Length: 579
Image (cartoon, rainbow, N blue to C red; front, side):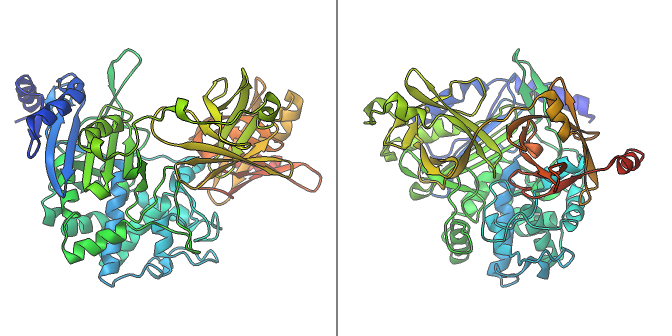
């Protein structure tokens, strides 16, 4: 049967039913309430969405809605595959910790024991550092963009290893700092599994995890850029509500290019909920908090915080584990409440974010467990009264040099506002003390700003609930006239990446261009510090020589904190342009 006939038959079947489900253990009223929450997806004209609810290790609700292919109205089922992005991380951690439990690796081993091809960068990087995102390796996604190479080939992890081999220094001393967006570590962990087992990572996971559990619709896509059979097509709707295919900018490297179904994720989460000694000890390790070498727990605002590569926080006063994946039109979310042994997972192929549906479903089951309301009532917060003069001292521009994030605090009608977007009023701040403010934002998260005086300005500490602080440094915005901007122009080259950017001034705006990476526009922040409009050059700092001339720039983003591009003299510039 050819594909056209097959799709046509499936399209006819879609007119009979838009859903596929396994309603296992909930009462009719709860079932009806879930159906109401997801009713907009119960149509052949909507992209696929699939849900599973798991209680005490057993799926009590599974259902798929919409079409896996809108062109042919192919109905989604609980076995339809989705690309799940960050959900791959848990399997990388599980495979690594399984080998540790078997005595085949040790977490405090130098990773060069298993990957001797990596260069000696003067510091011991351990398996634990990789699992904790405290390793200091440059992030491969940023390196790809800086080097100007993009590929649709899942085998790109081999190229990534080649780029990492050329790295000359680490971002920081391993175990002494945390990288919220560290990603190279995942490729290295998968490569360690391959080195120890003698199997490719996808083959190992299939033989040791997926096949034994009956997860027949789960696969790491290593050897093809074509999605496997029975995969939902990813879409995004435009401003007119028209759905268009959206596969994202690139294909993920094989070790993080995971496709799975909602049925298989039900099987997986049921498996790791088993109370058998072997599984229990492994899962306990996966749920352990990650730490710096000195023992300080990492409680990031939104990144990983346990060995299972998930974020641990709170929802309305009780512990919650959260995981989100996004790739093109695919979106995946997990909410897990460990004390109640309850989880809900949502996979979709037509939403930028589907977590709101997951939390609405969780609220149906968990509402009696939450000690705090769904949203904060800010009228009940007893703030302190500060004069306009007292408030004025906090007004200014702020910059986080690690995450390359800018923020602004401004005063309007005797109220302070916090904003991340130029020209936006942002969110009002409630004074809780002389230097501490609470941001008014919809939801239950308690977001605080605490200002600390320091020489030459202030630090603004941003926390969510009991997270670690994200520290923003105050700065006085700098502007340059057109003739002053020319000092930053020219060609800048990185020997490590064999890549260059040409800086120029266009209509008063500093720009950098690379034939493969496109054009980046910059705005000045403080002297020599600029922020770009693309994430891989969100922050750069120009370097000056003995005569105050610009000699290069240093990349200043989380996963690449010290890579230098040197300014090329005119003769060398001609040589580069001729290559």
